[in-house]
Length: 220
Image 1 (cartoon, rainbow, N blue to C red):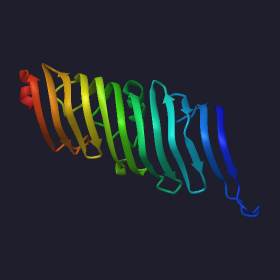
Image 2: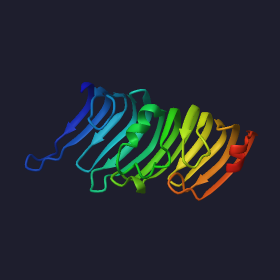
Image 3: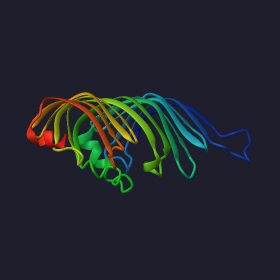
């Protein structure tokens, strides 16, 4: 780890009862953490730590070819590791990040029907809340956009390639808005929703336009 930080270290008022509080107002550092696939560069933002929680605000950073800005989050240091993200924007290189995410045993079952993806996802808004030790119980809402993105998923009739458009994803639903994609024998413009996404899709409500071939027509 290398870099610089500016802030305060508070040890409490009594020597016989020390309580550590760290309040950092500016961060610039590069660190290598075993759990991460690449070195993490932190550029700006605030950091607060006491014996009960860790908080960050307005933090930017780079991880491999992915980046994030204005990340604001809180982690409670309890048994459940309750975690909350209230703001943040990201540019995610899924070629690097998705294989790393799906390498975790607790996440593999959640994403078993999405074996691969590639390309860049631009996240304009991110909210997440729940126990970090139980990923299935996390509640989240992600607003974003793709450009020349590729998705390989069991619930589709073929690989969705050169995909561009807006999306909103929650724990239970994927919503698409004016998403243009090339799939199997078709070139499509799609809007609509997949409910109970991605583990147990029970309802698909889509508006589909474009050049639709027989393979995709049979799926629709």
